[in-house]
Amino acid sequence: MLNTLSLGAHRLSSGTELPALDVAYVTFGQLASDGGNAVLVTHGYTSGPSMLTPGHLVAEGSWAPLLGPGRPLDTDRFFIVCSNMLGSSFGTTGPNTTNPGTGRHWGPDFPAITLEDIVAVQHRLLQHLGVRHLRAVVGPSYGGWQALQWALSHPDMVDAAGVLMPGLTHPQGLSAASTRQRFADHPAWHGGWHYGDPRMQDLLMDLRLQTLRSYGLERLFEARIADPVQRQVAMDKACRQWAERFDPNSMVTLAAAAERFDVRRRLADIRARLLFMVCTTDAIFPPDPAVRALLGTVPGPLRYRELDSPYGHMASGVEWPRLEGDLRWLLDPTTPV
Image (cartoon, rainbow, N blue to C red; front, side, top):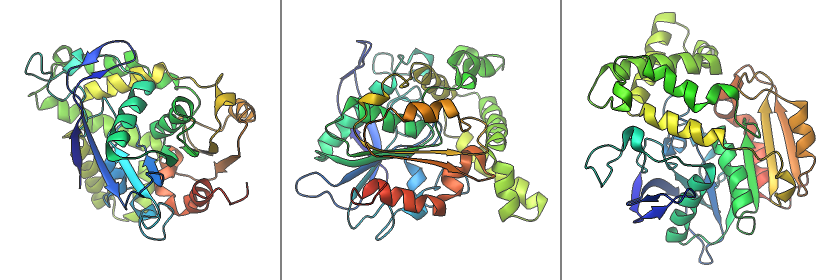
């Protein structure tokens, strides 16, 4: 069940103050009396807490099989938290929520944020929930960046960081300018004030389908739905459901935050146990010898994995059975490297 917590005003790292901050989140399991058994699961660029709820074949629901008693995200042992990140579109304050100063959507007026801001909001949520220590922060893609930022922002609070299918800095194709331009050329954009124009959903659906195909969506659906007509219907449905909920202004906001993210010179500051996984066919973050060499500067326990999979950037969800051993290593400090 998705919960929403109102945290009042919040000051961003830029000095700008959000007059009201709401955070949407889900939890599973029970928090220990000492507040020390929590695991924070962080979601990707355009997904949300539904990644832990059984759903369709893309990001939403992708990690649900990893959650439950005896599973890697063991609800008998851990208090699992997954919050919608700041600036996203699934319940946490962002461009599609109301600006108290105007009474309308924040829209393109939503202030610039950073990965540090996203982590700071998660930290406030966890404090309110009574979490004092994190056994791990783990997530795919943009969620992996959040895990890295957590290990740097709160080194004394985080035992382990799971970083699946990201890089150490943003890819060129995720720039805010290029993301904004994709929408600006469409007549439904209205300078970012697209709210109420149904044509924007059609554009989002087409973009979602195009993006997921580049991630490996077609191969995934071919493996699970033999009939090409039914396969297309299923892909269209999944993309339409997402397009009805996601605000393109969130894509611009989060892309801009990603542009400011670069941990290449700070890896030696990471003390947490680190799992870093890439996919051999990932067109977004392919295996990079330079990244692997930089990871050698991490002083703590490190497990580096190259997952040989045809599913590219979607492998962190599709190939969930192959993540189990590595996640158990991440969450159990007695397991050898």
